[in-house]
Image 1 (cartoon, helix red, strand yellow):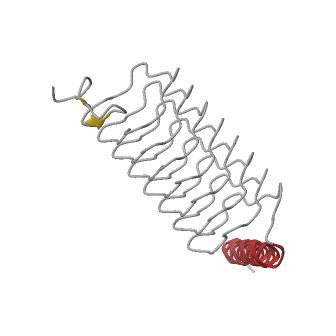
Image 2 (cartoon, rainbow, N blue to C red):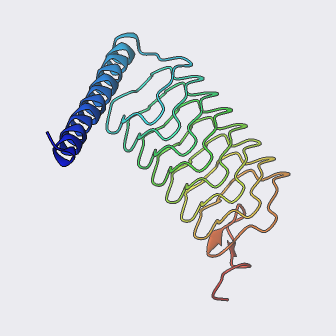
Length: 214
């Protein structure tokens, strides 16, 4: 067997071995995911567990207890999380776009750089949560508790915050273009450098002080 043949044989064996390892890893990951989801559905809880990068989109997880869980990078697109307990969880960079989070508890949760566009968080609790650089555009926050929430550089364009509680929240450099702040409690909130453009203020007036085109 000449050198070229040996080299080709070695390359083929190596490729087959690496392929086997990759398939095994995928199968193991799928098995773990399926098992974890089965456990969540059976017990209704996954407290302080790791669900990093899990695909949980479109699932019905209403009432589930995910407090303290690690959900960084998880896909929760259009997931039903009605009355879910997610306090103290880490959802940094997670996709919660279009998710249903009505009456859920997200107090103290890390949602930095997450995608919550179009999500419904009405009557939910986000007190002391970290929403830095979070996409909250077109979200619904009717009577939502955002007390002392970090909303630095967050995108709240066209968000409906009707009657929400934003007292002492940090909105430094947040974009509130087109947002509805009717009857919102903004006492002692940090509104430094906020982008106001076609923004409906708590007193019913429209604020255009930072419209880029004006």
